Every structure is written in C-alpha cells, then in structure tokens.
Image (cartoon, rainbow, N blue to C red):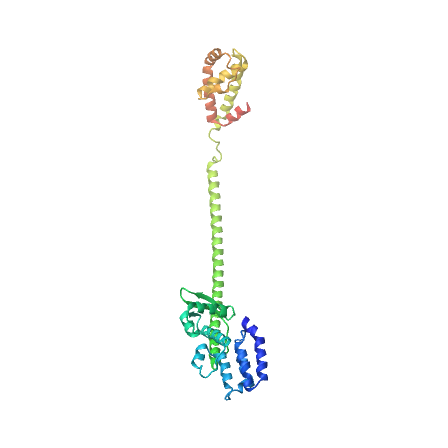
Length: 343
C-alpha cells in the first residue's frame, strides 16, 4: 500500500501534463512518465482525453507504449519491438519490474529459470541483484530467495493496472472469496455454539460429580461416627452391674493401709539412720523386679557396704512381701495406684 500512496501525487502531476499537451507533444510526457522511478500505474493517464485521441493517428505509437507499460511485460515488448520505439534504460528497468509484478499475480513461487527467461537475464547473480535492489528495495515485492531450490517465494506484490476484460474475472474472484468467507464464518459460529454447549455439559457433569462426592463423604462420616459410638457402647458395662474388679476395691485400699503401717516398721527396725533403712529395704524390692537400685544410691548409702548388705538380707522376706502386695494391688484395681500416688 505504501507504493500506491507514494505515486498518487506523481500520477496527478502527469495527468495535468497530458491534459495540457496534444499530438506529438505527448511523446515526451509518455517517456517521462514511463521512466519515473516512483510511477507504476498508468490507467489514469490513459483515461486523459488528449491521450485517447492519439488512437489511429501518426502519434498512436505513444499510446501503444503507454498501454505496454500499463498492461504488458518485457516479453510483450520483445515480440512487438519492430512496431514500438526503442526504450531508454530507465524504461527497460521499469518494464522488467512490472513484469515481476505480473508474474506474481498468478504464482507465489517463481522459479529462477522462469524469471531468467521472462526478464532476459543470463545468470543467477544478476537475477538476485535485480530482485533485491530493484524490486524489494523499491517496495514492489517482498519475499524470500532460496538459492538451494532456485526459486523466489513472493509474500507481497504491488498491484498493476487492470487489463481490458480483467475486471469481470476480478469481480468473480472477489465474489468467490466473499462466499468462502461467509461459509467460514458460519462454520466458526457453529464451532462456537458447539464449544458453548460442551462447556455447559462439562460444568453440569462437574457439578454432579461434586454433589456425589459430598454425598459419599457424608455417608462415610455418618457410618464412621456410628461405628465409633457402637464401639464405645460395647466397652460400657451392662446397666445394673458393677464393673469387674470393683469388688477388690476395698481390698486394695486395705493393702494400701498395710503399706502405710509397714513404713514406720521399716524405720524402727533400721540399725542405721532412717534414710538408710528406707533405701535398703526398698533395694531388694527393686532387685526382685529386675531393676538396678545401685544407680539411685548416693555416697551416703555406699559408706558401709557389708553392714548394709547384711541388713538387706535380714529384710529380704519383707521385700518379697512388698512385691506380692504391689503386684496384686495393681492387678485387681487401679485405685491402688491412685492410693500409692496420694501416699
């Protein structure tokens, strides 16, 4: 689009010049217009009345040159070179540029061989220089050159003037494109509706799954709570009956009282201090149950080892009695443990 915008002022300039000239004087206007580096459209100049009046006159050759640049190619010029005036270098370059635009109208991949034949170029280096410097840099085309596969891939090409009879085919092409676009739009709308429907179904399905998960969680929770309550009920004693072992409560308390009465007796029979008698009497009690009481004695207790050992053996029956009392008390009822803690 840039090239069309740039040449708008140039076209207006040459239209005014052509309108002011007649006959052979139009020859210089035609040469100047077809040699201008920024002008690639000539239909507006052809539509000037003074130019159209050249038809059938001695100066009609200028009209044919203008038509060649408007619709023709370099090959067309070579075929009719005997009827047309010799072109200047700027006109030759311009006509070859327009030839590339004509080839790009029908094909987007132009082989090097076809381009070299149409442009009358003898080697690849010359062809690539022409495409890069005179076509791409001029803004006529954009594309990629592939030296390995020897082709030019066209991505953009400027438009040329419509040839006579080409307007109908262009209208048909645009109509086909419009119909294809309408069909594509309908297809896209159908896809959008389908996507919306699937989205709603997915949301509904997800909601159903979440509801089912919540129901399962609630059912499992209720079942779990019921199982726990049932287990607790099974552990409770039947109504109207006392728990097993409660009949030994009085005996346990009695045993605890006996222990309380036993402690002063131990202190009374002690040959050493009360502190030593208390520790020595309990020493054999811990040895009976497999505990090392020696770990808990201090320097005061270790002073007279032989005397303490004899005194411990004297209290050995009492220690065994203590162990039996403790075992029965803990076995029959936990109330005995409470009593010991209180003591």
